[in-house]
Length: 85
Ligand SMILES: [Zn+2]
Image 1 (cartoon, protein in one colour):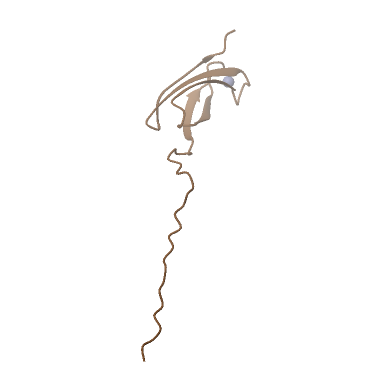
Image 2 (cartoon, rainbow, N blue to C red; image 1 turned 135 degrees about the vertical axis):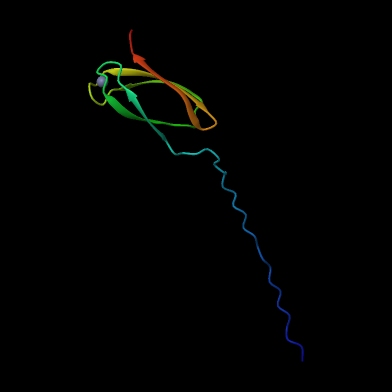
């Protein structure tokens, strides 16, 4: 008596989720405020290659202009200046 053959179909559920290759870890960097000279920690998003933005100083609350350059997910250049209108 042969045992009934059981066939197993291995259904591979391939994940159709979009593969996010971009690293979402923010880069921590310490800069000196161009107004009060205090060292402040800034968080930089490495997924954007060229960034220019204004963020208020955590110490003196003055608007600091940031210019950031990212190369292959690494911070390659950062400069801060006073936001002179
Ligand atoms: Zn400051």
